[in-house]
Length: 544
Image (cartoon, rainbow, N blue to C red):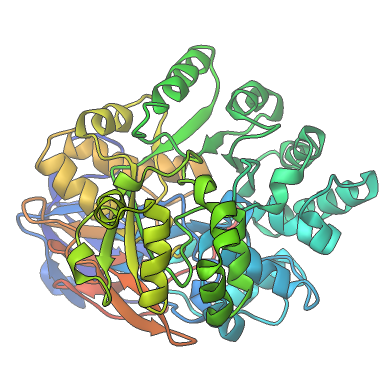
């Protein structure tokens, strides 16, 4: 038996209640005692928690770590920021089931929708995952550092049933029955629920082509299963009204992304809809975030600028992309139809140049200003820079969620849950795995948006309860020893830096240097001690 004593900390147990000064004794993977004055001589290891908060490990509802485990079992950057449990399969993009035949389609989906480099996926992801159970076993065999559970994804089962035709047409009754069987099989294997994205976009997902009847048929499988939750990126024929209207019929909790403070104020209509249905008793939980909706990209894969013609170039070579950028006819077709993440026509004042070898004078300025200086449309100025820089021009695009007052309002909405870290997705564009340390430092300590105990509850007990994770999300005797120890006076996300460490010689943004995050235990295993993390195969597959 291994005994770890977390000594003399302020215990916030994840319930939302006040802190209590106590020691926490861990025996193997469980919490054995919580009280003051536990004899230190009884422990194999003593972790000092004086002047620090002892909290449950954080639960991240919205990650895309599905593929990352196969080349990074630490599941960074989340592992550095107090997260002990991550949930994948979000937006309908689970990494199972898929056959060897359909593997290229699934990998292209992850590239086009979540911006994961094909060069990385093609060398890391297994040749096939014929069932969801097979995938969970493959994931577990990689010995992840974090606990992991996953939704079964609508788009993925659509590809399994329809192949490439999952993009672009309605399913036949026979194909819907096939999908229902795959969802039932996944739920029986332990999927935490069902996820879909019906929102139409410039980068299409297979599930956006589903009829309302198809989506309801698959949700009906979840209803028959009787546990788990449903996750939505709503729009099209299954819009936000449908999410709220259908929840009671299915009988499990729903969550959706995302209620963010958009520059155009559109979030206020979603908030009014949520409050109206909440008053009627709808068990629906919008995901909110303190993180700005800001993304980076290069002109090699400028996926933050959303347009079908630009996405299509992902299938070609650098030379084909450069030729398109130089083609006046291509420019004329694309120029007026470049959109933002919110699917509005892009405002070039929100697009900033981060790097350009050919135009150093443009760095730090908006493309609106660069275009004005050159006397051309900002789009044409950007295409010219992309060509001159051989696609290495790096941009940053601001979509919203930057108004402090509006973010504060949304963080405190009744029924809303913290989500949308998107960890594992968009590796070269964003790194919002820092959401917990940003929330605890910049928002709770510095801005006082909510009490610390409330924030800890929303990072721990609340998402664990929503997911039905028994024995997790609370510091209680007999529960699993998923524990985070942090200094509330110094906790902060730290530096986010661009690295070049992905398979296939690809880049990503990494945040591995938070401050104030002292110790982390996952199932009783110490994965971070005295602000230094080290890989340990501590995680477990969490099944519903």
